[in-house]
Image 1 (spheres, one colour):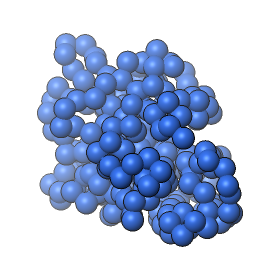
Image 2 (tube, one colour; image 1 turned 180 degrees about the vertical axis):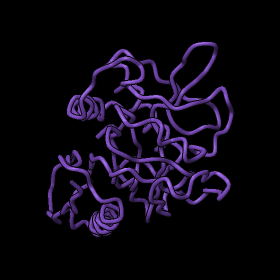
Image 3 (cartoon, one colour; image 1 turned 120 degrees about the horizontal axis):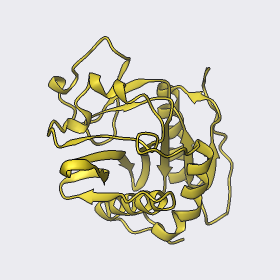
Image 4 (tube, one colour; image 1 turned 180 degrees about the horizontal axis):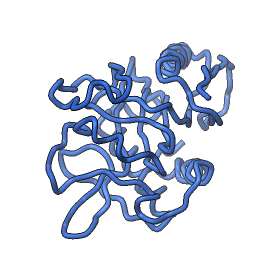
Length: 225
């Protein structure tokens, strides 16, 4: 079931961001509209920062650097163009999407540092499940080593900033249908030594709730309040 979740604007004086988790699949288009509303409210100090955790129905999304040639199968799934950075990616059931709405005035006006902190946060969370995630120079996201020198991406990152308030964020593959990635060149990466994986593909049984709890636990280590 796809729902159009509601994000109430509530003034909240807590220093830690609000955490919100959706239990049903969330419409991609509606979610982006709600993010934009929340970003405006955060900027005007009418609402607290927000970490929003959800899953989308199966869709492809195109970032600001997306190239038409990287969309292999135009009839496979719906395609949405969005304002986040990056190229084509996939969202769908079994993939946890984490929309991060933070005021970088509190964390330093440094977008490069912000993306690095997201990567370190993901690496820290994965380590709780015994997964060694790593960064690759000039390639955004988190990767794991496989056999024969292969590296597979397990988490993708695509962000946007409006007046120093962040939105969009990252996704972690828990147990999505990996065959859906066949319809695109994910993030424009066609190197045969690089692929896509998930926690399930790595032989791990992790629930969405498990990952959400660990992300909450490891947040402060990467974003000092």
